[in-house]
Image 1 (cartoon, rainbow, N blue to C red):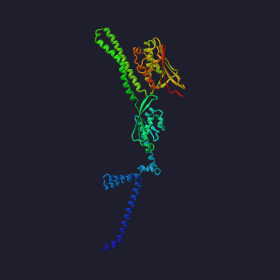
Image 2: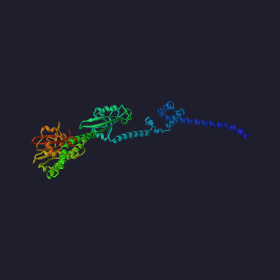
Image 3: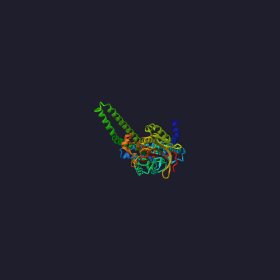
Image 4: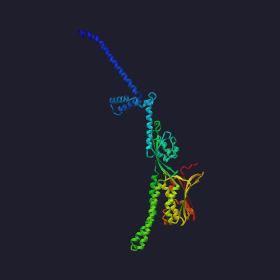
Length: 464
């Protein structure tokens, strides 16, 4: 008892000192944690204010209790305070100079974003172009270059297409959240219809380096041609097939009736029926061939061919047909190769149609010439490739020449049908020449013959 009575008063000051030291340590740690939390929260003041307003609205108008609102706000604040400052976008944007590694990561992230949207645009199946807020071209995919070969990065959209409807659609989309769709009708170098869709990404508030607008183009020419082809096929086929079908029906009825037991009549009628069936087959084949050519007339060819080689091939292929008609085919080649950009099969078809016509309407014992050469044409004169098919037949009257390439048009209907013509050969020639950006010219003198000439741009020729 005496020892406790003496020791107790002596140890009391020490306990008090230890308690005060522990209290100071707790206060210091609390203040340090508060200062650290304040530093963490400083870049996120705006987010915290927004959260506070949100919880306040939920408490006052949404039925959320005040304690739950306070607890939710504190939890969100703790989450924000617990974030790694190195991962904060705001710090990366505000203090790039304080942390070079952080700035480098931010720059790398921006470059990856830029590369990502460019790759996405390249993968779009339709022709597409990205525009900045000034409507200048930022990037475009390969499909767009096929529609607009002169497109370049940095040029204004108004230089890409001067169509006022497209420019109006872009200006409208820049101030609207809805995409704008407009149909464009191009007439040069060939007629085509294009549907353009303009979509706004971010307007003038979009991040630097990212596009403001995306314009996609879909070529509807082939779709329109297909619909027109169906309509034309029904109209033309029904008209042209009516006569041979009526003949076949009449012969069948005759063979089933009066000529049933007449061998001579049966042989004669069967020969006529075979001729009419062959005519219908040629007609359908030419209609399908014309339809295929019309569907592709807006697509420029990509192959390369030599006109000298094509002329020799066609002459050799049709030599038996010419020999049967007692006509000689002569080929005149240029000194060197003349190459053009084109589809070889289609150019062969053009020459075959022209030479077939020359054989059918040429005089017996005459000749057909296929000539390949270089000429200067236009004003000012430009070097061009020329291939011509000439005959020494009956010729064509001047009033018929402007309409020869119309489908089913014939200068002499009876002679054409007698020789197996369908009235579609020159229409096919015209559309193939248009697809190859060439020019068909026809000259003829009645009683002396006709010349069909086609001009192409020679590959590699220097145009002034």
